[in-house]
Length: 216
Image (tube, one colour):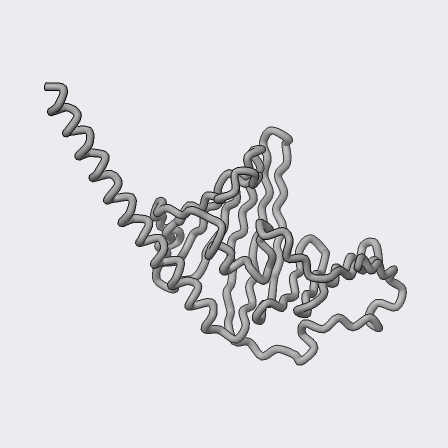
């Protein structure tokens, strides 16, 4: 009797393992499709909504932003601050303080989801599993759950919502171990836009009265 029960449990576990492996394979296939789609564009322009929430600390912030990406270069506008990355240096422009901070590229923080990595960050450093499918305003959004491989990572998990028809990212939900939840939702996604030659170039003469802080 005990042997029969053991065999039953073993078969159930094997069945569950097979289902999990199949779902993980589906997740990997979908993420690969998203990556290939992103790489096929010369440039990408995104308008998005950014939400930060932590009920324990009574934090609830909403803001809109936009980012233009080309390769690893970008121009990001969020919360009144502009960030320009020209491929070598990052220029953080804060009009409220009339201050500009210039810093070199820092590759040491692999966990940070920077604008240049926001559409492909999931390709390394995470375990991924197939999650729920939601119908959002007529769009089928498939979620992939990403769990950081590094146990010291302060993020508990990331939910990546993917439009299964267009193979583009709809939203990204990051849940911290401290209860903080940040959500980035894409409002518009445009590709191969005509860009200025100086799109990713910092021009100091535009900010004559700003204090420039060079960190490196």
